[in-house]
Image 1 (cartoon, helix red, strand yellow):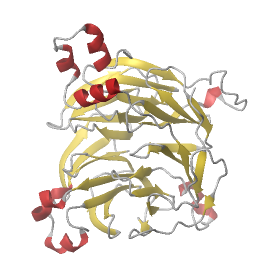
Image 2: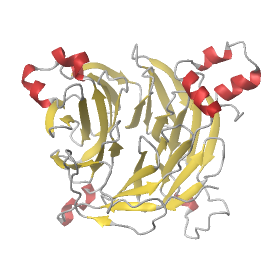
Image 3: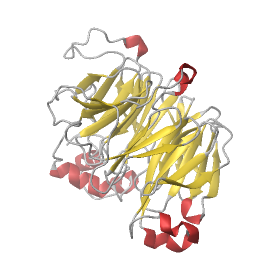
Image 4: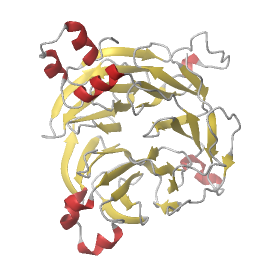
Length: 406
């Protein structure tokens, strides 16, 4: 059993809001930039905080330090300064995207060249709003680059491609997903229709070949990011699917549902590989106030090395799981949690809750085995079908396709 997550720091909104705004104070989104230098926090009331990372040492304590620090304001350090982005509407989603400016420089409007930032870098933050707009901000300057219009309802989730192409996918309560090309002046490339309920979540696979979308339905849809056509429907949940995420090598997909379960899939074959149940905690965890009947899932994500999962449920617990173990390996109490994400270099997990708070927790630090590193390297460019066609022993095929832990 792993050590339970330790609370490192807690951030709270630095201003009181009128009582009538209470319903919009939730932290629906938290995210680290791909390079790990920024943390974005939707603190409610239409405000985004962009915070340089890491936090100053007196705020973020080393692992094992149990005291909680409630921080009202975080100052910048070095050349990076904290920024406040006023979106004007309730923020329901956010996502970082990055690219080298050399590849798309000529496609950007001339008037914006001065806003791109240091030579060779471009870091963007997309925010999905309650009025259906998507605002895209330059992280370096804190200025708006795009106002993307087209959705008719709340933009519930956002996902950037990881290959630097600046392709952005938005998921909305209007039951559609939209694909945008930010290197072509925010052109809308495609509208994806297929869901019959609100779309809660979308995730582009790290190899940029697939898109997963989850809605208020008991199934999820897999789309091709090359042709923008439906690949398959994954069926197995018994209630609305609320969250989804691909493993770092794109070989696995995890989905989380209001039915209290997470399912791990092979996205290439549609096979259900494992199911993780949130009904009760194992006896090893002595949390007498757990409420099994309230364990609907809210968020799930893969760790950066691909060996762990983190989940938040309505029973007020953060759970960390190993891929091949049916019970959580560590648990921590998180009140009213809504979202979670791992630091891209490992060791830290961030959670956001309904009160507009962000909490930072210790996460497992693991030295990946040579076997897992080889599997991850191969699966970054081999599909399940290509692995199965290799002239190697069956046990090796099972390991490479995550059917067994060799």
